Image (cartoon, rainbow, N blue to C red; front, top):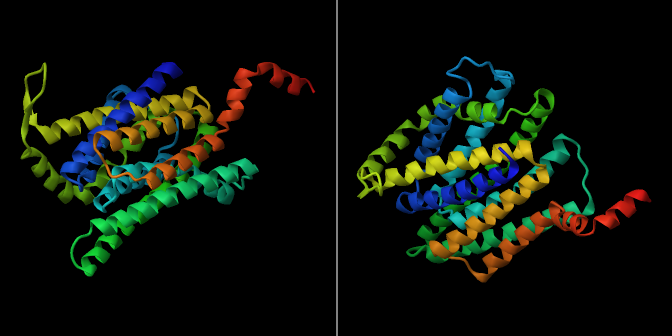
Length: 332
């Protein structure tokens, strides 16, 4: 599969996935665990059948390394979805996760002893400022929305603050996982399909810790309003339909990202994912009418400006538009 097809998978799969997730969250804000569980089961089953040949194919990367990676991946996935229980709006959720570059740079400096150019530090400062603006404005909205006594308002704010703490932790853990993956791929080569399978198969026993919450939401989903699926003519609860769409689109999304990492440069991957997040954010604001002030727009613009600066898009565009200048520089 070529890079163009992978980019299409990312845009179609990831954008559709965000829409289906928001439809679920609007009905049950605490449904993150059952959504994560369903995604993991589906991708693990697909990988067991088609990637491992029903368990007969041995992994190229030792299982012990996958256990470490999977622990981080499971933690990040569960915490990111569970944070939606704590008054975290979907637009803020998307903007906050766009700060992965900050976490990658910080851990890259600490763990890999990397050094960056001045433009990279400027871009990270812009991203941090943008996320800070959006977070502060969302905090004010939490306070305004908390009708009732001062004690109830304080409780709602602290509840939201826990969600922000969870997103921050998940952001740092995700960056650490990325560095660990980078070192593994350098040592054993890139095996995207294999990594996709083991990252979703090995954590499945961990969902036993969340079994009560998953069962409760299973009951809630089963009692939701029935809907007839077009063309098929089958009737099923609407929340199960949303979950089915979410699981399938999550597979398409993550498969596209994994393929993209093997087909394209890290610059291209970052650009595609960033543009996808921007489109998802715009759709979430317009279609679901999520509260989004002019300050939120400013913060969002600053985040994406910082991201584009970090990936040196302007330099790449100049190189494409003026290849003769690049050749002259190389000649000198």
